[in-house]
Length: 186
Image 1 (tube, rainbow, N blue to C red):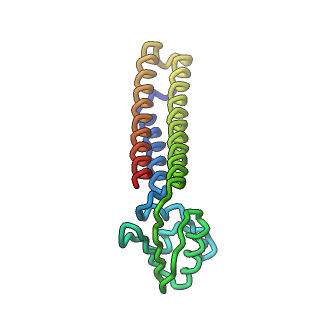
Image 2: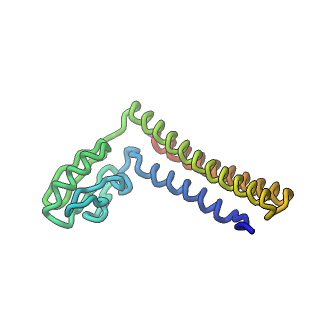
């Protein structure tokens, strides 16, 4: 007999896609300072690539500024270069071991670009959820073929998978709508 149908695993994998979307959306700059803006920054340090949070502390001293406290004085220039090279549109100014980053106002064109990027991230998440759905449906078909479950059970489980998919898509759309509203606020 093959493995039994596991709706919890399917829901967990769909939630993984939603969490990945939320992480991506958090990194989109909206004109307000957020420590999550610097999460994608990777610093060349000690002969390897490290996330910025492993070489410095990122804080938000005010709503339109970030402060990056670099732990090792020798790493200040490497962190500065990594932030500039990350294509985030940010230009740090160095004050000793602290990098100060002013978050510039977003113009209308940049807001529209960010909204397009957010839509792209959301579509990638929807595709990931649909892949999980397809895997679940394929697993059910295989179990019916192997006579591990009945066709009635298959229909019931397909309905459950579809409900989980629909709920995940709604959650993705809500996250996108919230981020789009945040981006477009002036």
